[in-house]
Length: 315
Ligand code: UDP
Ligand code: MG
Figure 1 (cartoon, helix red, strand yellow):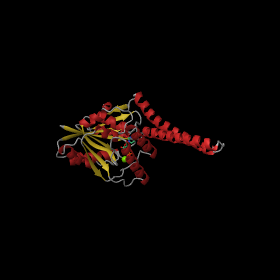
Figure 2 (cartoon, rainbow, N blue to C red):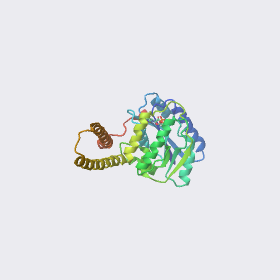
Figure 3 (spheres, protein in one colour):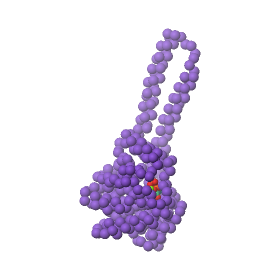
Figure 4 (cartoon, rainbow, N blue to C red):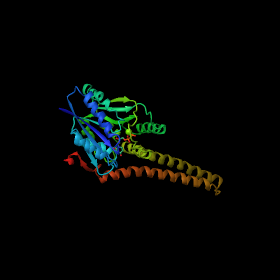
């Protein structure tokens, strides 16, 4: 029998897991009633500090479909998704959030599309960002405009991590062993026939978001450095422009000095220029540093996550 693996990353989700489980079970029992397919639920506990793990353990004891992976600390959602993908044994794999912001009721539609229309991957995007702080929506929009201009692969505005994919796509993704993971880019990188399904933003059922402004900002930088080298080009361009300007200035000063002599004035402007140019230099060094630090982390080849226990340790 074919099987769907549902991967759910959980970080401090004690308030939502039970609700999520109830909803996905409803989908399995009602929407998939007439389809001969099995389910497995893989919850990845990303180092939660609340009762998440206990709740997962008791679920796993009750229901053999429930599996869990528990990390030794918080490794981030990207690591959690990768661990889930590597653990999944299904023929179809889906990634969902625990807070029901990736509505499980869409799963049947996604499954039908995947089966009947010969797609390899069904992805979802939010067409509205209702209920989100306006500044966050605005910055997200700016980010997508920017990254699509400066990187070779296209990223869809409002794209969620919520997807249903075939085993083949999953294998392609887990073969990308990079440490700095930005999955919206990785999915776009591996290609395959992808259909986008749109839906209205849904609010979190309980608990609160784990993404602070600062975390999102770092994630955005991750996306840029992982999928574009344009900032490096930019600092070279600025360097060249400055060379040309200073060359023209040198000629101007030589000519002026030979005609009018050399009165020593203009040191305030000199200071301004020095400040400006050293600012640009530091900025460029910073850009190079960003890439260098990413390379450093890749070269160290550290594991992306460390598993402390799984449901297999329960018995
Ligand atoms: N999450 C995770 N590790 C983290 C942060 C978040 O596994 O370090 C999970 C979280 O439990 C949730 C999903 O990622 O299932 C999305 O997080 P959240 O709802 O806080 O983000 P938002 O929907 O606000 O972007
Ligand atoms: Mg959420």
